[in-house]
Length: 289
Image (cartoon, rainbow, N blue to C red; front, side, top):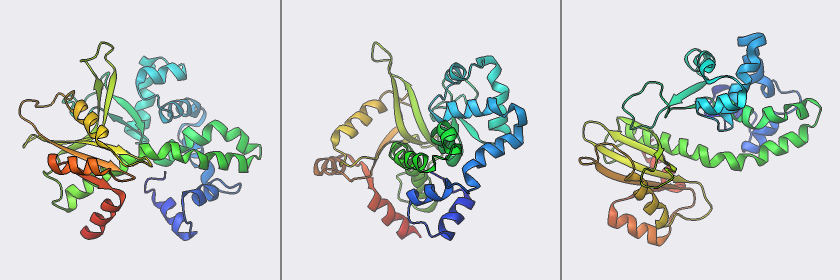
């Protein structure tokens, strides 16, 4: 949730907190200066104009990532949003702009999405900002309990980020991966094989532009072991990705919180699929360190 922010890491260890629940209780206690840190920062930066930036960050934090979607919930014309987005992205680095990793044109276009670049800022706007009035009215316990209960809805998405960082770590510190990664990110696009052109996503794609190797990866934070249906669906979606289709060398990696079924492990052996669960990830990190 805090994404390695130095003063939160220091706070966590200084106060000997055992888990994220204890962290939330401490950060959002009545006397904590951290509870209002994002608000105070933005108000200092933008003064009376901060309300507009609050609306934009709330929209992005709650999943409105395209310019048209942000405009729709903030009542700001799409053509008028860019100066605000530039301030948040180019000046303060609070948000980032992403394109599908295989996209060659890296400029602003209709496929791009915006994301909050700070985990705490994203958590604050998506979970705390909507109930900040209750907090200020003294309903500390109720707000804190709601924040703690919201963690389960966040972790699956953050697990993708952890898996991506893990692949970057392996790429920089070991020879475990089948090739050296030159670019890594998410992929999304319309399925033009279906009548409704439904949107499809792949959690992680990593490529090497020189060797034309490509990794397709899915990350599952579930209490059930991954079975072959997850691999089959990933294999299907890989066919939708337009990137050196007639030349590329494909690799598949699955990440799972709860391991894999015997059937999936057997399929992995037969098809050279790399499997990572939490235990395996920790073992590899320990061996590299």
